Image 1 (spheres, rainbow, N blue to C red):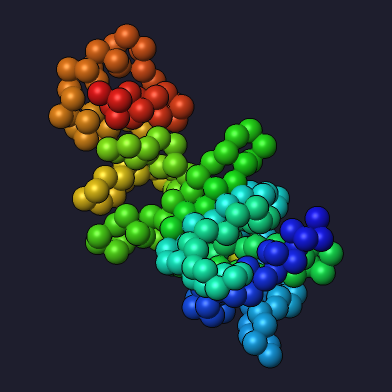
Image 2: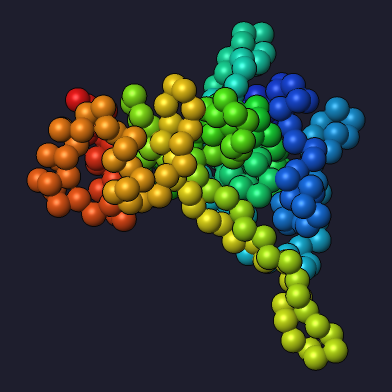
Length: 248
């Protein structure tokens, strides 16, 4: 365990400063997320607690630390001088609001390092049910309109992903009447996308939204839908449909 922690600290410490976030999306919207402010101190990044007062809700896809693997957008020098774009066997969790991957370098010391989403290609964790890979949406969108990460539900010629977005509700407390909400509320919402080599297409879980995008294999798709009495509102069934499409 000690060896793993030391290895983790060494690997992350060797990442270039550009990989580590100092300005978060949460800062841009003017609220604290309660995750701490990462700033350089004597060449070492450290995390200091921030005041969580006034902010409540959800910031993480999964708030628990999960062991996972990280794939960086570019290879960086690591132990021994060799370059690698992978960091394996580290405890991580993704902050959706900040678009930052938090890495638990030392649990006992509560030492948390942060990698900007823009410096990541993907990361993979086991959520207790099975391994899930999360892919960088911005890297798959030539228009530059998307950001953040999506859970990869099906991959192939067309990839099906569930993207996570923060929904922020500002305080509306009225002191005169003593009514309303004093806190800033953060809640996570989901959106679905189909990814291809040419870009990303936002979809809804509906027959009308999906079938036109799979029209090049219309006969096979229509037969599959009929045989399985497909419920287009069911994420798992749509995942099966996209996997079938990719298999043809």
